[in-house]
Amino acid sequence: MDVKLRPGRPEDAVTCGQICYDAFATLAAAHGMPCDFPSAEAATGLVTALLDRPGLFSIVAEADGRVVGSNFLDERAVIAGVGPITVDPAVQDGSIGRRLMEAVLERAEERGAAGVRLVQTAYHVRSLSLYAKLGFEAREPLACMAGPPLGLVVGGRAVRPAGAADLGACNRLCRVVHGHDRSPQVSDALDAGSALVVEHDGRITGYSAGLSFFAHSVGETVEDIQALIGAATGFGGPGILVPVRDGVLFRFCLEHGLRVVQLMTLMTTGLYNEPAGAYLPAIMY
Image (tube, rainbow, N blue to C red; front, side, top):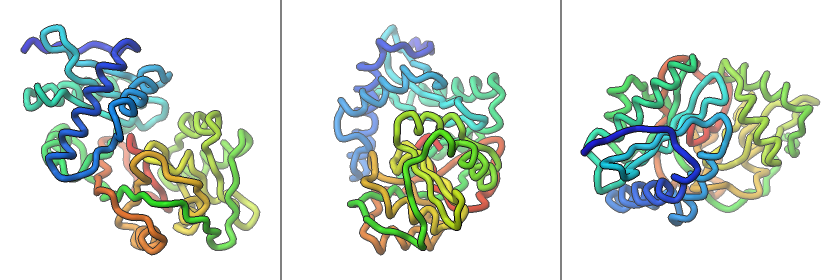
């Protein structure tokens, strides 16, 4: 095949969305797992949003003039996030995925990203091997967890919608826990109305850009993350991503009716600090 890469365009949304769904559905079915997307329309909706969102870089693969795959890079913050990367199942195992990954890593280097992160599907051992060969380190086992809203108040902590005036406190908290902030993502969540903050002892001790597969949360302590989970009106997408090594948080979720949908792995290159607090990553990191 004559494979060429080019920047993604809005008119690629339908084709790339169908490929995204087909790739995830085929892989999940082969392993007896649920698909991350309930339908091709849902995958197309995500791809459409990614192609249209400022701060996200997209790359499309064409083989013999036909679109066969795509990849995305969230470059809104100092740490870049990869995904979703998908290749048409009919042309997989032809190094197209490697080329799509190399393209976004080159882009991150050109842009001066301090690090790059992704969340890998644990049962997909070939992607684990590819990412390791490209320099990624496995950092954290994650459990994607879903279930009904808990309706809990935890440890006297108050959870409320975040406002623009909370951005500075959220950024300071993220820098303490992770060594960098995610201000652009939090700003977008504020604009969308999905951001929450936790208040304890008269100050903000945790925040969430949204309790979902696609958004991150940060807390000084595990109780702050528990409070956010307890107050959520629902969990978007396949579920929230819970670090399995945080046994207290993991057991809290299990004991309150959340179930493990699948296991995943946080992988990184470049800057990485062991978290000095509690957190939930997003699917792009």
